[in-house]
Length: 357
Image (cartoon, rainbow, N blue to C red):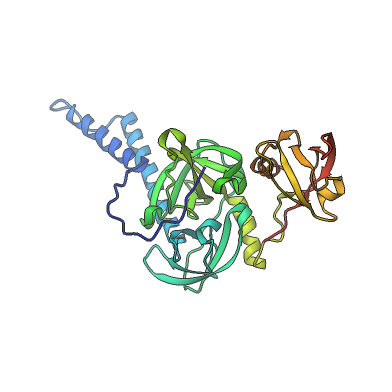
């Protein structure tokens, strides 16, 4: 998977913007009306049939709903810029807190936030949590409009999804699609980060959309666009129509903790209490064990090779992280390890909680 990395601050020479469903609905309605009118014989009634009128009304209603959403949400989506590039962010509250992706702000402490009206404000980092790729920055700006967040647990495949952000530096750009699916243990940044769950969407997600808003037809934020799928047959390029967003419920939880405490105090992520490394696909070797931690209490030792967790094979560190991403603190799971003497052992381990930021 490819992170929607910050856009380098380079001149934009030319961009072709494709128009989505909203325009298609409008054009389809206009075309249908025109054909119906032109097909009328002289002297016949020019009124539309109930079926045609219903279709036109439905299309126009959907169009109005899209326009309303964009007009309502756009003031809550900002551009976040630092010396390395730019991304997007969502206004959390009237105090000026803005949530974005951690990879948008990594390596910087100060930022410039540009609103949908073009006003620019300095911003500083409040806190971040790399394991969930989320961060909060803050501006001192009057009258910023906070976004409304929805309940991502109520989403269904087929729900309309609208992405609002700053792809390629094109401020307040909008694309649309649907919720295509829900995925677990999605890895990004070369496997260094494993997101516990993501929303898959067909709305076009491009570099610069990172940290922006994925909203429903009611204008409620349901996720933060974060990464796109890549296709090896396209030379590693983005696969059209397959993007992923961090669910709004996770965003509210993590961002809320950062606003309240300046850091994450309860990650809700499973933790083994050890440091480990790869063994060329033969398991994950334990380098250090935290005294009194989950691994130590289960009898895992330095030099052990973790072969599986909760029945899931863990040939690499990335796959170990993926296995842990779908588990919760407090669960007791079987872990298969190979001891240094070559013998295999299964231990029962009660998972700890990943330390906060």
